[in-house]
View 1 (cartoon, rainbow, N blue to C red):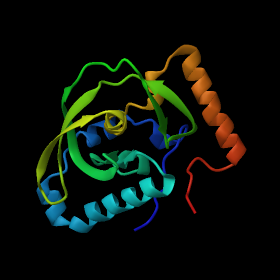
View 2: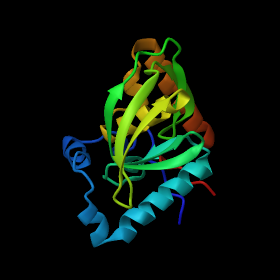
View 3: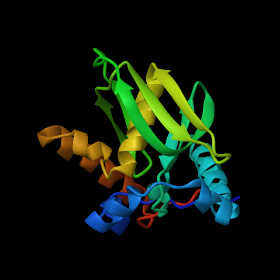
Length: 186
């Protein structure tokens, strides 16, 4: 297992092309997993290790340069691997927005309004299909990661001054760290 570099704001992969978005719509089939289980298992394990190393709530495969419909997200304090996740139903809008941060936009966070619950159906590496009702702050983490798979970034939720201030914080952090576009945990 290894800690993967996370694609960051202003890098090529932070903005998906239409072709890349189309590739992310292709579902991972069981035959893909059976054909070469190590590829998906290794990627899943590496993403989990990366989430732990960054003390993050989750990470989508496309944030580490892999164009597959896979996320790892914290649900009820456990890391959960979701292949081909689909939102079946969302609850009512939350009256209190959740504070969200993103590994692709280090150094900044913002409040994002989210529903109070979500029902997600996804596959496991073992081939099982699970449907899960997610509530509370976990909704924010799950929806945030699923949006990555559709090319929607946290900055897309902002407009005007809020967006400018958010990006200024990210750029200030990147200048302060004097790191290349991709961060590596040591």
